[in-house]
Amino acid sequence: MTGGRSPIRDFAGSGLSRLEPAQLGGLVTGQLARLCEVVRLDRADTETYVEVLADSLGPAAERSLALPPPSPTLLSDDHTPVEYSLAFLPGSTPALRVLLEPGCGSGDLAANGRTGLRVIREMADRWNFSTDQLDRLEDLFFPAAPAGAFALWCALELRPGGVPAVKVYLSPAANGRDRRAETVREALARLGHRQAFDALPPADDFPFVALDLGAWQAPRVKVYCTHESLAAEQAGAYSRLAPDEGRDQTMGFFHTIAGTGNDGAGGAADDARGPLTRRALTCHSFTETATGLPSGFTLHMPVRTYVEHDGQARERAVAVLRRYGMDSAALDRALAAVTTRPLSDGVGLVAYVALVHQRGQAPRVTVYVSSEAYEVQPPR
Figure 1 (cartoon, rainbow, N blue to C red):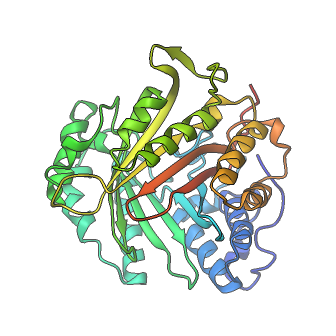
Figure 2: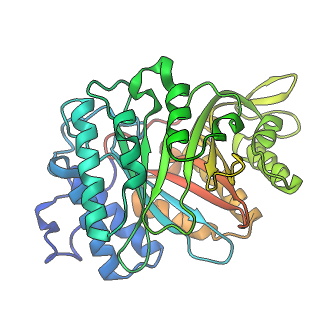
């Protein structure tokens, strides 16, 4: 377990004084408060967002960290129901996001989903955004006896002003693993993207469908695809974006994060197509319904899989950030905000690094940072 710093010393009158560092809510709100400082959110916004995080976790926020995690969530390696990410662009402060499982303390998957939906609708009432897109999919993703590994995750992009942008993640396995592709196709069709499924690449699994809710300039429907073995050339081709530069950037990013140079060394297997990664994700974003083509592509690389310890993961992430002229020092400050442990003492703090291409926008890089509330994975 990480850190013993008090999360509430700056918010003594905020109602968070009930939480202690030895409780799940106390630890993660402390981490979030320090991360808000890294991205230069002011005190009022920080207080709002740490309270939202604590409230969204419900009774699990007061759960002692001496107990097992509230559920075996797949949101993180150690089953902490919270993960952070920083989205970097050149010449600007990174955007901070927090991903959480609102129903993590529920007794079963159906109750988990009901809790998640309730929390999202409470957010919609608070921040005055529509849940119409989610409502169209409720019976599809929340059956009476759901299957799958999770019901609903929620991501908040923490913006100045105290009003976040909201994303929800839904499980295509809700109706059974054998119906995942069918469920994704039906979800896209209900949202008006009837041709979109045919634009997706070959995939081993469809782990998530995500929806942008609230104040997004161009709300997206996103489909995530798992690729158990992926070569750089495939990743470039799967981008489905017109500019050759985007494909070249994707391939260069692949090699940097996987540690696969010209000699193929680093943590990936080889075949005739070149080095292969394990457990990579691609994400395909759809914003318009006329063509059925994606407007965005993201390659998510599980950097923790390709390194011995987090010091190496940090080096690879920094190499990508510097290549694109982004603030790598902010990543170091963020890691220090989450844990005081030496990076070489574990692996998984830096979980994923992603390269994002969205039509009409500069590439951005997202680094995913684990809370490690329950366990630090030993270095390999």
